[in-house]
Amino acid sequence: MRVLLHTQWGLKENFVGGTERFVINLAKGIKKRGDEAFVVCSNLEDLILVEGVQVYGMVPLKYRDKIMKYGYANEHFFKNEIIGHKIDFNSISLFSSYVWAQLHEFNFDIAHLNSFLCCSLFPNNNILSKMIATNHENDLELDHYWGNKSFLTLTELVKHNTSLKKLKERIVPSKYYSKMFTNLWDMPVISIPLGVDIDHLDKFSRNEELRREYASDEGIVILLPSRFDIQQKGHDIAVKALSILKKKGVKFRCIFSGFDRDTYGVNFENFKQLVKEYDVEKEITLTRFDNMLDAYGVCDIVISPERFCSYGLAISESLALGLPTILTPIPTYLEIASNYDHAYFTIDHSPEELTNRILEIINSHLGINYLEAQRFRENNSFKKCVDKYYLIYRS
Image (cartoon, rainbow, N blue to C red):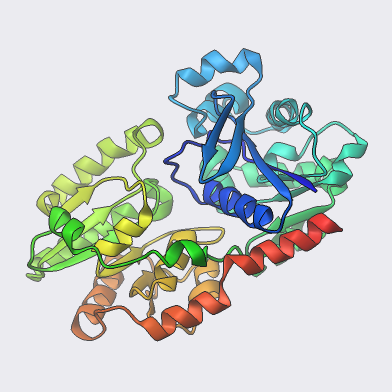
């Protein structure tokens, strides 16, 4: 069996992003079962290896020079060069045509796409029955990425005519959003939770040497591991909470990882102003880790003040390592982390609530919870995710 895994983004060797992690881990899982799996994306390089997985770059000729302006095929490229000013049926058609041009030259038994939007207006072709799609963007994320009313436009398209209906399966990582998409679109959208790569996490250890590089011996180290999207990931909430902590006399260092200057350069300028305004410049480190286990290895507490999310890979990794993790009460986080002792939920998205949870952990539960980590791993192993997708491929 030959499985093509597609992501429209560029996929660099030191990538940051849940979709990229998903396709690489899934490819590795398929290969372990003795079948062939490879990734097709919007890299300008014809072929690179990422963690032993073949990653093919396939970009239609007329777009190659345009991608170079953006560093790589990030969201700015797609918004400016493919989508244009807004999402409508025409721009979705252009997006689908771009992806179709990436795929049609490859031989595969099953093609696994990772966006409903980019495969909504494929040509009416028998090959659609050999395709499935996983969507990693909920309704709020679609509007956030592609512009206001993007989800509404996609919903209108689904009710008229869409190649989505002809795919073998449509999948999301959450039961909550599975029900929402199914009810709104009147077609089955199933859920397969993503889980975490247990084999990868087995290499985790406390890294005291690296910790000394990022923080002094005094105080705690807080980590916000999400990519640098302030509006979605809540970096502004975190900065305001850290300011409250500082005023209370708490000694800390907070590390914001996942910074990608090509994609989030504008956010960086806004972030610098925010940090200066709330007087926490000396307490914050903005960086990027090639290996996220290093980030987890230097911290005491993980925070994720996210406003909306279709799953939650970073917090799943944190909980699988046993780190005390602070979460907002969004549907997917509640689905993943409820009933685990080392998951601490805020009651809202306020900085005050985030501060209260940090203080609660400092005062009583600082340290790794190995028992809960093991229970979380058993319930959320990525191998279960691979098993479920593998059954779909085989069918």
